[in-house]
Image (cartoon, rainbow, N blue to C red; front, side, top):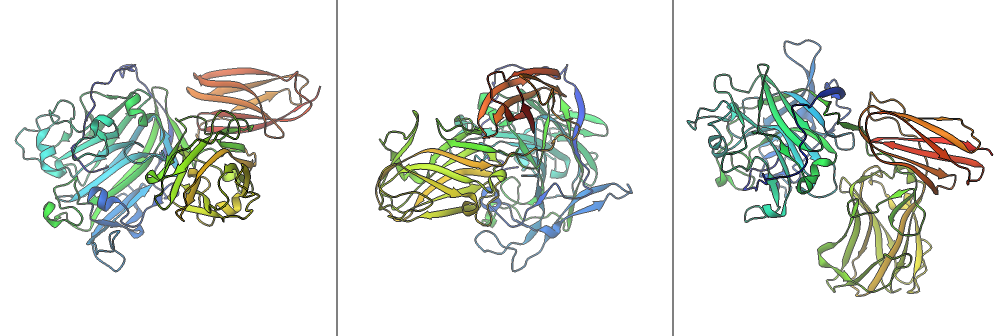
Length: 594
């Protein structure tokens, strides 16, 4: 849910189109009935929503609760209350007082999903002027908005201009007389360079940005306004398309003339998203005024206290697709490569699709120092700006929790008189750094100006606040003294990650693999069942964590599979078979006895 600005809509998208005629709704993969909030993070503060959207509220915990649905004993719902109130802690990010509070929750690090039919049942209050309720999703990606993607299942409170533009369709009367309680819409937002225009510098392409009224079809109901009663909203999401609908009185209405067909430009929608529900107040999306500018719109007239209810959210298979991840990403183990060519690793960041190297604020330029190992290295020259900073950021959060007793190891060639810091940043924005003073041996790094190796215990690197389950920048280098130099980095990896068996994240999924015989002589057979089409990877490691063989890598359809591992050329001993199918991960021990 972001401000309705002047956005570009890229409508002519080519590619493989999956027919919705043959589409099928499958099993329920996950359902939130809101009997508790264990799966949710309750947000507090004004954050960036004020300057980003001009919202007027302060989110606080006591505005979020679980309540029994009136007239439906034993059925509970998420209950978000918006209030008109002030207080010493109800302030914007600059410390200015705010007049409103509300509630917002998300499932980041607890529940994420990719594809499926996502359904929610929602009741919104009389939002009159200034209310902005929404149930929506943000990409789990570490990239900034809009590059991470946004899926708005439902949102209300649109400006008059938007309501009037589309009111000749989908229940509208063409008389430009709808109010905010009579219309609901959906949206999807992604990054597109062609969408960068004056007034939209972020490049946010919005499928609801439809100035010619060709495609966007919000739903109107004048006779029975949409507030103070429950409606069902659906997002049909697969690898080819997004489709949005609303169900009112058992009739399902399309919110766009056709599904939005995704391609490489909108690749954000091929990655996981987490859920958000909130009731915002005011801002650029509405006809109310925006934060810091009372002259930008009308005064808020929404009656307070205002109560929004979400009965449930559930995810079902759609076109045999749908993944739900319970908890943070799958834990990594063994040796995890950040930037290395020759060091044996169990997994790592090996392509521009998986990670990017960023220089901050133009503080560094490309250098000429050859790599320490392999054909790839990182070499920079400082630009004399008084400091420098750079980091390697993964596209998706990385879970290095198993490395709590391990080390971050790297090679660096840097003049001995340069003091610098090495650190990490998690997906919540927490940062921590360790110091490498000039002319001192620190963390085994000898400062002689030549290539040296550092080995930092993760216990030092993580500090007190870093969430190792959700890392965004797995390696950062900073210098704050303004010294000019040329330096290089190479062979960066995490070592000492304990192997672990991860439980299934899909509640209806059985254990991945059975292996027989075990112990075995020269060959053993792995059998596994896929309940749906999945990306599958099965790899064999020895006891030192060295990758021995990849048995399977690629997408496989639903069904039963068998694969033989021929270990005739391997030595007797203990081996680990790491199986990963979709979001499910498992490690199986096996013993070779010739």
